[in-house]
Length: 306
Image (cartoon, helix red, strand yellow):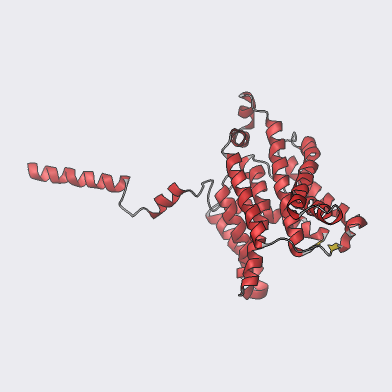
């Protein structure tokens, strides 16, 4: 396994992580399941390539433009669907993702079903890592801000959140917009990495993969999102030695984890310095050890008095 191959896997991990971070905000922290995020990736990817090739914008600006276009597209979708109850929002996003794919299939300006070739390969491991790290930092700051706490309150109990004055529709729209921007940037990174865009790359299967990564890592955990994205992107490649059976082993591995840990790998917890300290703390040191020592001292004291 040479470095070029490993670097390709790492770049794909970073692209998926960027998209899944946004979906984690929408699904994990706001409680809105979306099966159409591949549609936002498609919008962002095509918009970023158009901005770079046709408008001559620099690569970072083209990526931001793709993300903003995807975010703007999400606003009317959210306005029309976020007031729907139950699973209707999920169904609406699924329909949106498929509609975007079918529209791009028939727009010859972008190459239609044949795809858009000749895209310069500008995405590198460095700029993907930078985008993923910056996206993770921004997401951590957002989740721990007042806005993030309001989104979590909506996820836990929307009626109670409305009662205390939280504008549920506003924060749902904000969550959808930010998640679409992340997906759009990821779509642009993917386009400039593969050098080619085709509508079938953004099918419902792609949306499902992103949602599985969020659930696999743990809903409500940014650390779980990072782990889930990296593991589920790298696992099919690590299993390539199994040839035709690798996807079967991959599916079985995901099912096993979801059965053994239905809350996901992290279960809503976050990796932190304190978490590492607890993990590395020697057995017997701490509260349990202290209690044992006190009990031993008490027993010793009773023996002396006897």
